[in-house]
Amino acid sequence: MKTTGGETTQTETEGDAESASRPGTDWAELTHECLINILSRLTLEHRWRGPMLVCKSWLAACKDPSLNSAIDLSAQFDAVAAEPATWWSPEFERKIDSMLRSVVSWSAGSLTKIRVRHCSDRSLSLVADRCPNLEVLSIRSCPNVTDASVAQIAYKCTKLRELDISYCYEISHESLVMIGSNCANLKVLKRNLMNWLDPSHHVGVVPSEYLNACPQDGDSEAAAIGKYMPHLRHLELRFSKLTAKGLVSICDGCLNLEYLDLSGCANLTSRDILNSTSSLKNLKEVKKPNFYIPRSVFHTERYGHWRLYDERFQTDVFRV
Figure 1 (cartoon, rainbow, N blue to C red):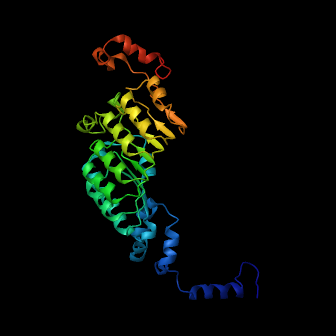
Figure 2: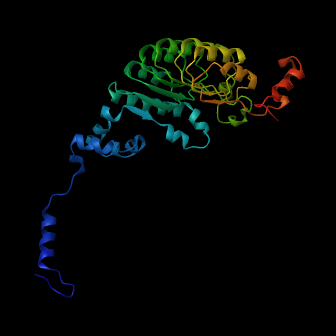
Figure 3: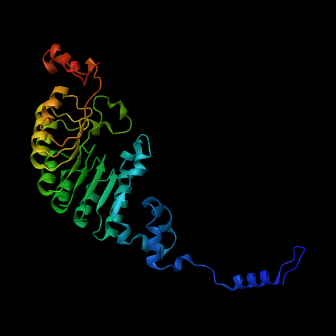
């Protein structure tokens, strides 16, 4: 029965009464499977900042191994234009370690991908013990990751196919030997260093003692890569201090290389790169160290005389 003049109808009244009699929807009563289905559509950050704090059942769902097969914080780190000094503090490292250890524990061995920064040996040792199926490990800018934990990764995570240890100055060529010897599936290696030609980019952010600890022997690392990583396809060595000798070691041993990044490698000339890479039939892209180095950076005795120094800038790479 309908009425006019804004009066409620009998149908509307009955509908309101029926709605009022229905029990309220309780999201906490969703089945575990439904929760996992919903939570799988969220990013890691969104799960940690919201659903994990709702109730016990939601927290339990967030801990399900199926939702913890990867921890990728690269988007959160990359969203910041320049690293703040707080990222290099012990407090921040402890937070990253805690987060990484939690995901490792919840994964129940299913963790295959890790992309974090500023972790330490403590959490990486747990990764080695609990994550035998690990395939991708990116741990850039970790001042307290050493050869000790990388050795454990090498021996226990033999399915590794991608490794990024850029800006980890406590890791030496010995780690590269161990990784190469035990991880036959390794296809991608990123071993970039900070810009040592212009350290002003990092002063005030990265601790000075850490900057001064930059690995000095790029040729030792290059020799390890060339000898123990023959299946590499992608290699990044930005601002490495390797020489032409080291580059020859890499090119002679890694014949499957498709991508090679040598940006900032000031000890290499265009001629060095051309001669060394001529044997790489699958090489598709080479990033060369095409920048200008002021004379004040180098001492005359480093090259013996200025004629040899000036010759470096007559190549296409160093054209000024």
